[in-house]
Image 1: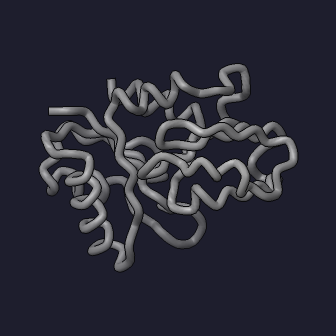
Image 2 (image 1 turned 180 degrees about the vertical axis):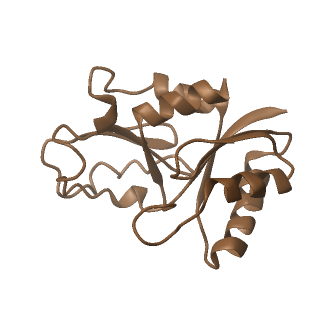
Length: 168
């Protein structure tokens, strides 16, 4: 059994995508995952499973589509992979609440940085299956657009640290 972290896209953001964390926990348990724990109401769940990343992703996406009536993207990492994302943060001195990793299902394309628009002080670096962004002036005022991360989901370094601790 491996410890995994699943990160859901566009959950409990704005008026759409409402998903009570108890429902998410129940879905994970029904899918056969064990030791299921959620963290904050933005679609973060830690659990143990003997399934592969692809099997976990498919199972969760099917459950979420049945619940929400529309596709909900899921990105999955092992506990070790999530810890590596935290350790690999290229902006360790930056405020953790202004630094995010945008998780992707595959390696970002080599053209990702060249395709960025609206950059005005944000620092961007490519990772293995994530893109790191330091929003020096905060994310709320940023006009940064990164086309390569359209199907990704972002978590700040505080959340990643907490999920890493929960995943052990």
